[in-house]
Image 1 (cartoon, rainbow, N blue to C red):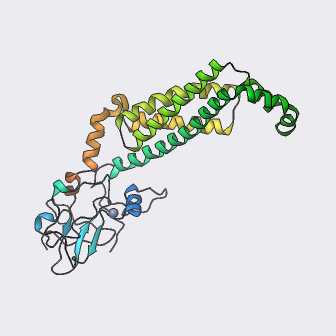
Image 2: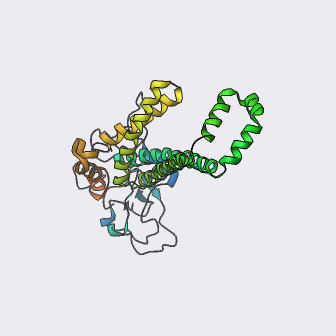
Image 3: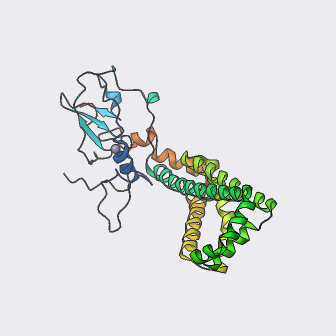
Length: 302
Ligand SMILES: [Zn+2]
């Protein structure tokens, strides 16, 4: 059986064919459904059901006394399993009991947003440490000034005159200035943390908050580059520009590319019962039976 020939265009944009069944491409394509199934296992239902009826054909089918075929709700592979020796429920769960997993573009979006969320978590840790350092200096400013004066020659010998000068400069700040700087850094750290939590949970408000904060921080990043250019600064700028572009275009903020309505339509197209019903082997459509990564399930009612 050729398992690499999904019917082109049959699955709609974002879910063109069952993950892993496309013809090989020169540039490999990351299939997020397979990542999810590698991490969580296939998302199967009815594995503990005593009986399977014809109405369950979207998610599980029987094959005349042989194994049952369970459809992975995430990656669309059909998995052959023996009926349970000790079933724990009479029938397959109804649709109202099943929580469908994300797939297609909504799933890809979740992975990308979570990558940004991890980046924001790292920002939070760095900024929180910085704010803690500023408040530590504020609490011990006089003692630190005396220690630095006593160890001037040692510090200069170990770290150089530039570092010594910067330490003296920081310790010479007025307490009010340190309060303002420490509080400002702490506030930004908390906002980064809130962004990260919101993005991890897929909240729309977090996408707007991240867009606003990242765009505002582009200004000092560009100004920094006018004084000196380093690889780290360039990477930070490129990453943040990519985040802004992704949020604007792919997440359709501010109504771009159809806005939230187009986003919801995309979600309906790739996720949901209609998407699952659209492509059934021997299903209600006239489309030919699909080949699958695991095997071809029996036709409806067999
Ligand atoms: Zn799967």
